[in-house]
Length: 318
Image 1 (cartoon, rainbow, N blue to C red):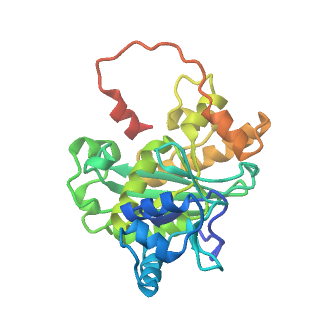
Image 2 (cartoon, helix red, strand yellow):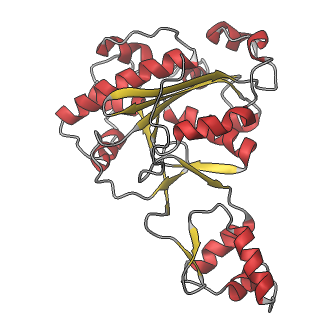
Image 3 (cartoon, one colour):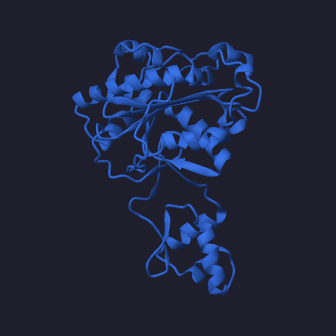
């Protein structure tokens, strides 16, 4: 897959779109708690947050500015006092993957939003315990069409297990000279920015992308997420499974390279276009409608318990 020309200079930060922010620290958490009661002067704020009674104003202003540098959830008002931005702002709800959601009215029509379909190949399933990304692809869907695509191998800076190579056909020789994640992070963030993060098993891909982004940049990513597995459960209850193979077959989408980031992301993006039309035909018109529709779990028949540890394999083969 090659880069497809997109809207260079497009405005980022659509309401609820993916964006990054410096990771929370103990100081910013204390500041958030303190400012939740209302705006505060820098001297009072720093005295509380830093346990520094009576700091000189110049020092307090400097420390506050440094603490909130790059943050979009804090601002200094015209009256010189710091406050938490509440609209639009970060709320404390969580979406798939456990990340905070970006506050949004939910009234956006689903056909007016843009989506970035992400797929990652990894060294394993444990993002927080040493496994790393070996390949990533991001495909932007806008106005019902594929508008932009990005794909790259990534040097995971650790060995690739043999069973992963057997599944993905990605070898160490393929990635040893590839860029590391910190090198691809700026370009990747430019592709992700402003869109709804979408993936087939979004929890898995979000967990790896957010973990790698935090490690590489010190920033966390926030924004709306859409899981096409969950959406398929509601739209296609007749399918025996909602794996990408089954969903793609239903919608007549071919997968050029299965278990490679580019092939899976492109196929998921083409399925997404069809799924959004399908959802619209089912009376799902807005983001809030879509969240309610995809989020409601249908009753499931009890399944016979297996002795095999399938959860990890399902993450990798979805």
